[in-house]
Length: 373
Ligand SMILES: [Zn+2]
Image 1: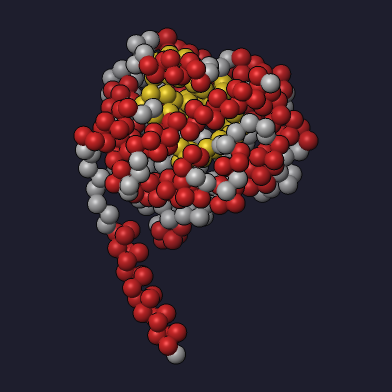
Image 2: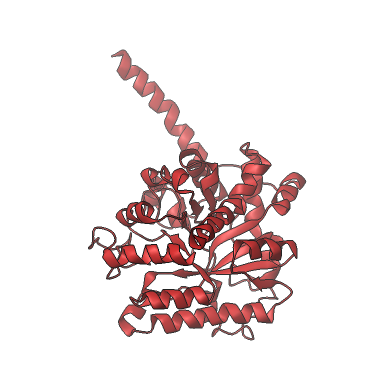
């Protein structure tokens, strides 16, 4: 009886509190302190889909979409990248998994790499191509945005390790093993698992990536692939754009048992901003189209920092790859507000710098070290 009363009293207290938290958390207001902490760090975002956005709506042409000007229909342009204090970026050279059927996955991926090349050549005061952690540091010091590429989906290699090498040679420094569908050699998080994880060839892909010094990206893959890749990889792995499953039970997010393996592996989980992955499960069940706020994203950062450790969390916005974003994280100009909210929650400057980019730079260097030996 007492227990029941106690339980009822606790429930009465807990429910309005939780509800209240979701309903109204304060607008984050940027202070000079946060500006200073942000600009003295190195924001290195794990995933931006501008090249795909440009292919889709700009005819792959910087004449049609000049990113030196404001482009309000996109999340990304140069004025806003500068306001957001972006120092380094993994540009995604994603192409659709449908290319598995049309047989031109590698060709289209090369075309996406060409877009990034042309962007760097057209805006040489803003961007410079980076192929290593050392180059990233040098370019960031020079005041430009260090630009590195990531392949999104193993379909791009068309089943050939030779093609993986070609993508590495063009400057790609991570590959997401799958996109939204299974491959003949790996299961996707958003398809019915077929292989129980990685096939023998899938394991060979991971080893070859270690040999090359290409980061193994586990966003989009099934939990079995996550575990098997971490078992096999002798280098740190990344999640270039994934959030925490405990907060939002979506298959694109990372379960706690995988987060707990990050410290030994040395890897980084870079938090995705897409509302659908970020808002808490109950809220998503209530309204698929809820946007959420910056607080929800920082909740994911905090959860991963708590479970995996502050050395294993980063930022992987997915800007220009998603249709819906939380309030106060509408575009690439908004990153300093994350720094502000981390300060508000008591994070130190040095921890914030790790989260903004120090951690992923360390993982990249780790992959380079493994490749050297
Ligand atoms: Zn993605």
